[in-house]
Amino acid sequence: MRKQLLISIGLLVLSISLKAQQNPAVANTEKLVKLYPNPAVSYVVFELKNAGRKDLSLQVYNGILGKKMIDTKLSLERVTVPLNEFTRGIYVYHLVESTGKIIESGKFQVTK
Image (tube, rainbow, N blue to C red; front, side, top):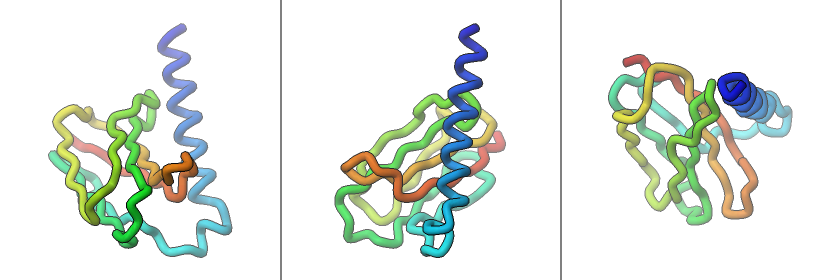
């Protein structure tokens, strides 16, 4: 039962992020975050194009289980995330304003 709940939550997070990516209003705007390498093995770099904003945080979730892996306030224009605690799979990131509004979402793959 618990396994089914975790899978359901993961699918919900993934579907929300995919809907955000398919939103026509979002599709016409330029991405604020560039991430590389994708797929990643030992680290992933997030580069923020609008580095002047201080009210943003980066959240990373396991794409299947929905487990929050990272929730960090962005103070630099470039953040390198070590993947020591990450297992092989798909991960979803959200760029979130201090109000809680998700302004960008994306995904990346970890291949260990």
